[in-house]
Length: 209
Image (cartoon, rainbow, N blue to C red; front, top):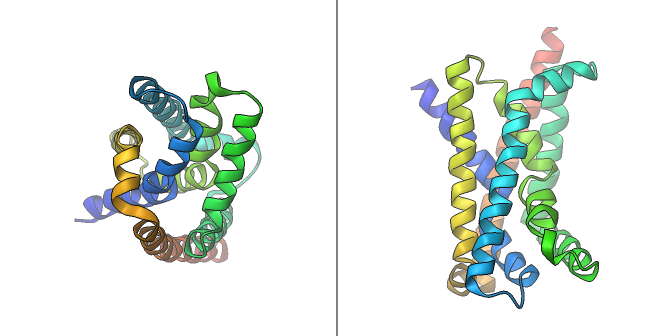
């Protein structure tokens, strides 16, 4: 079924760009010194904020693009290139290093009370890649019911993210450095293939126009 395939592709793309397993060790580092209850509150709040941001772009992304005179095919091409760059970073483990720098900056600036919003919700959860993927994918969900289904997909992805953050200590210990490295690379290859498809679709639409 094409509808199921589109929904599944959207789910995989959003989940890969958020990369919950990759967030687990960063979450532990950012929330160092907090007890389990405080970490749970931070993780849930960050996931809720991230969902609100992505849902906003899912429902109003096209309007935002129109305000700036950007066509969807052009954004699809640019977004695909951005996602490919993120995939490249994941495959060669550069994304993790960049995220670690963001986390370190936040802690040194004494933003412990607001870490659910920054850097967890933005830019670690609802970062440029996730926002771009959300806007791109929302173009394939045109009817009100389809939009609602897409928001439900976002909710499912963020619920999984919240669960991983709640179990961050166990997830990080289970995967280990080797397992985390292998999983990140596999997800990076998958995201690269999806990004190439975005670029191809965008260029084809631009040529047709």
